[in-house]
Length: 116
Ligand code: SF4
Ligand code: SF4
View (cartoon, rainbow, N blue to C red):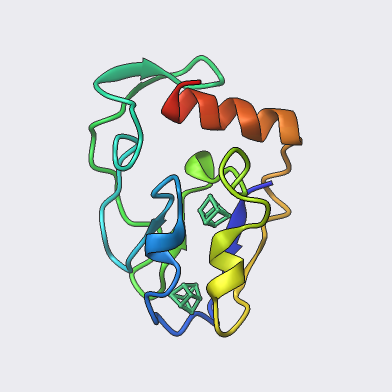
């Protein structure tokens, strides 16, 4: 599962530097798959779609920090526990029920973004 940041976020900035995948962005910030990963240029997504890893994508929130679910591995491959949830002072980094993934899928996502 990916995590999601709720509207209880107080924009404290504590989580962003903790994410091993650069899956977290500031409010109103563009994001890309290339940020913090080894993905560059045209790549295939895990579902087989063509995407431009360098493309700047629209912010997912203009009010709160947000998590790009396609980059969130729940910290699998790096840490025992989700680092954003560990540091968040208001406990607003929670499991995103709309993005259910197995541990194997999350590890595949990690390898897709960073290599072996
Ligand atoms: Fe990043 Fe880990 Fe939080 Fe996902 S759970 S957004 S990978 S820090
Ligand atoms: Fe928002 Fe929590 Fe991240 Fe602070 S640590 S920016 S409150 S999600």
